[in-house]
Length: 337
Image (cartoon, rainbow, N blue to C red; front, side, top):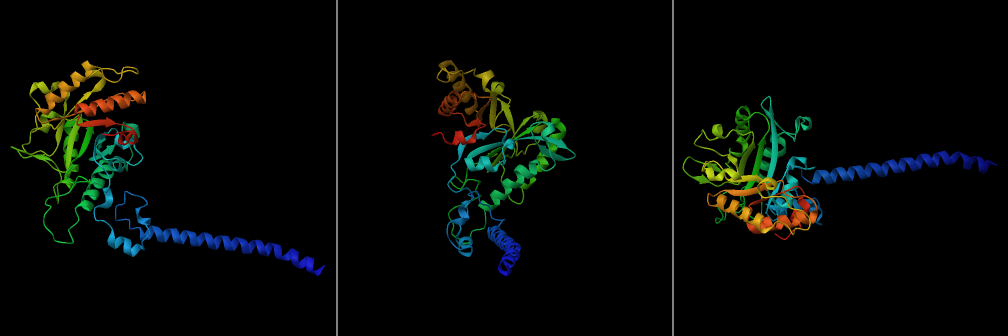
């Protein structure tokens, strides 16, 4: 009987010991995870989420890391990330896919530029500065760290793509609020891209100087007010159908855009993509733009059926469209461009 009583008394004790052991192990796991996060320096950009686990001790890893590894192995593609701010991770998702163009709709309020498709989607933290300007500057600073070995040869600044360091990043800013009052706010928000190092493409009054970030203004952007200044580091997204007016050239516009459905036509399943008449329309658009030094982009291209979308994508790229507007980045990057 004494043994039985002793056995009954030890069961709660054993449970308490088991709970304590579990808590101890759980705490150790949490500490290990915290140390891992601490070792993975937050100030160093890492687009390859698992790169830090390649097997070297942390001290060796951070001393041997490739300086411009952030976009290493990412091949730039003629892709425009349509409504980029809708993505779970704006800007970086497009960059990881190799898209050379991103788009932000901006709404001015109290001197701040909020990013969203409509007024109901705006939040305090989703600003042009937080989602685009600051991340772009962060990447450019990472790609342009001072050389530790003073070997000459490469000159000038590097862009966001390690594979093609002179490739410009196209930043479309679609002004949703009244253009005359919003334009000065947009211009002011671009200042970090000008100083202390100027990364922007600009018109100096006589010549176009290509930079590593090219800003295109669209939406409610007031063309007349935009071209008042002789020096400009932002350009008007010209209407493709109005290029023959002679109003647009490389002093004020570097890209021209059109609604595919309205200007080219509708494509349906079973057509095999664009017919010859549509292709000729696209060829004429491209010729008209390129002879002025202006690129071409279409929006509202077919999205479904997927086979039709892919066929039109391939035809547009083959015909020479400069930027392919896409919503599905994954599918676009899987194509053989």
